[in-house]
Image 1 (cartoon, rainbow, N blue to C red):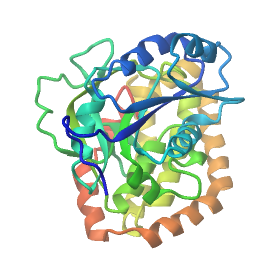
Image 2: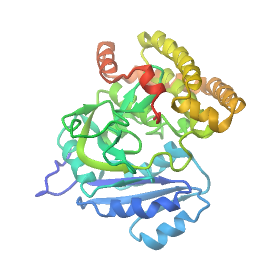
Image 3: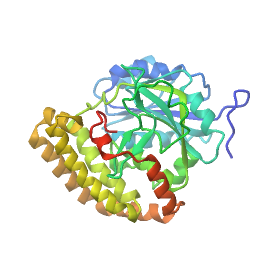
Image 4: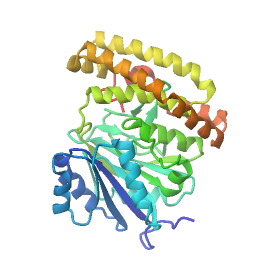
Amino acid sequence: MRIFFNKKMEQSKVSIIIVNWNGKHLLKECLSSVEKQDYDNFNIIFVDNGSKDKSVEFVRENFLDVNIIELKENTGFAKGNNIGMHKAFDDLEVEYIAILNTDAMVESQWLSEMMTLIDNDDKVGSVAPKIKKYYKRNIIDSIGNAIHLDGGGVSNHINKVDNGQYNSIKEVFGPSGCAALYSREMLEDIQMGDDFFDDDFFAYFEDIDLNWRARLRGWKSLFASNAVVYHKHSESVGLYSPFKAFYTNRNRYFVIIKNYSLFLFPKAILYLFLGYFYSVFSIAGNKGPSARLLERSGFFEVVKIVIRGWIDIIKYLPAMFKKRSYIMKNKKISNKEVKKFTGKYVVNLKEIMYSEHIK
């Protein structure tokens, strides 16, 4: 049973996981903002993915209360968070996990506002904060994740001016991996082996996959409009990098294979095909991330990304189908309910293809 959060009562314990890879230049602002939370009962677990920029030394010297996990190599965003979560759960008092990107900073009420929502409803497994652009603070970066039937996702309401119109939103598909709060109960309910996030994703769309699994198990996700985050976006790998393009292209297929009910497969195939068409169309019109990637990396690099993605998809097919079998066997909601929430949270293809920031 959860201990309901009330400022006059004992607060539930939260572990905040921050995964870092060569982000030393971001850490002072990020960690300082976390330490200024008006919520008292939390600790910080800093997972370093084999950084070469002396990130660990910087944290050790300047943030004495931060728990450091120093890894020898870059294990990816998914596994790095999993390692942090397992460390957090060694403490049986930890009931919640918050994750935060190093290229983000948070306002002082970020954690308390999210906890107010999640700690009073047993059906709520996650909370999405209001994420704004760091450099344009009246512009939305994410209000949770929206989904697309091609397996991908996009930050909901991205690039929209915030005039307070989003404060009435109550429920979202799920939070962005940039900044999120999850209940231990939900994470352990959707856990597959040692994974909360799927290690095979390495980076990108692992949050979409986790949100799908949570939804299929009947969990809800709420939006905390007063829990504010400022996000610089893709500071570690670059906005239009081949690295990001490879994993977003590949991992959308993993999401489909693992989580889509059979009635969604025809639509997924159609939207995947249309996605490639729109990529070509956007390149021709010099708009959107596909055009920026081609401009930065060149035609042959883009072709190589697609080919490498398909090789990996084939390589991982047995593992993904095994995971799919487990997910479908253990889902708690009907196909009718799946249709209802996919209809509610899906965005159109054009909006994704021309968005400057694919999730």
